[in-house]
Length: 59
Length: 352
Ligand code: SF4
Image 1 (spheres, rainbow over the protein chains, first blue to last red):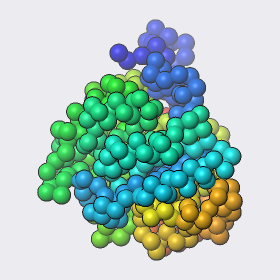
Image 2 (image 1 turned 180 degrees about the vertical axis):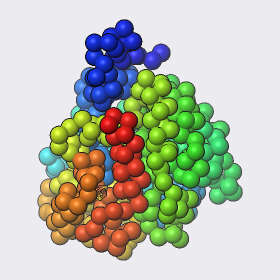
Image 3 (image 1 turned 90 degrees about the vertical axis):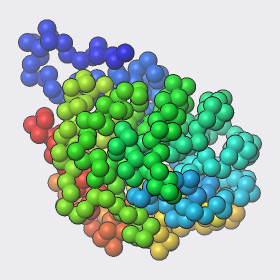
Image 4 (image 1 turned 90 degrees about the horizontal axis):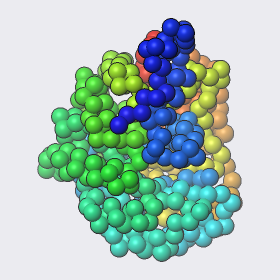
């Protein structure tokens, strides 16, 4: 079951139109897909590892 | 935190055309004596270590080997193990063993059968999709596999939506895309992408499939690119450029620094990264920075001055610069173009 709770719903769009597609929202949406499977600490680690691991395309 | 990549054997039970590992037919394995030395080095060091079994197929080493590994280097608060595997040998016994011992799994899959079976084949050119698919689903269900790596080949270019759909349907949690790239000579690796093949359309189709799916999958490349787009400064810190972070152990006990793949790659390119044999070392910290490290930092500086896409990368691709350009002090590799620049252009256009 996909968790779309953090995606802006169509009823909210009128008020935050210009922010609708700002990456921040998407970053939150993709992170929310990890919730329920990982703890908050693990998710923070995953995010940090993703930003750190650029040269290392092996993991 | 440090990361130690270990080549238990360079042997692999399959023979993917694009693989960079040398000696894929060579069944020689890492002597367990070296693990004793590795444990001594870890214990004398100051930080946590993630040991990543890679560069050859680790599971061909067998159960008993990994039972011994855990006797020599037990999982603890400070030590974790990860196995990067082609997924073929993952039966129930393996999955229980990995789960019981908290060993994480990264599985290589190129997506749906028509893409996966194009290059991920046995020595007799037979496809491996059916088995890998079954094992990938079981590993995810069991909570053992937390990440999947997908290599982008020529076969993938027009099939981004199908690839997205496939990984979404099997329930992958974390997905990374590696564009096929030259890390060794053409005798070792045969690449399908040609010089002028562009990935822009692939990234665009993938992004649109992801967008349509409410950004539900955690895709490493999009996370990095969007984070960069969202930051004033470059948020990426390539770990190969971090001081004393990545180490890499070849099956003969030789330890290398900085670039994970180096222990399984070309010995001519790898020599500047050679630290010593683990038998003669006491701790990670005693190994001072190698002369090549200042060249790597100079190369990163050059990137920050010359490359308009530095923010999306951080000046990585050390091995690619060496193999493709023949020198570190350079920019612009095929990997830069395909893995960073074309991707950044697509994502920026979406948010421009
Ligand atoms: S894309 Fe290439 S040239 Fe640009 S910063 Fe990264 S490594 Fe340097």
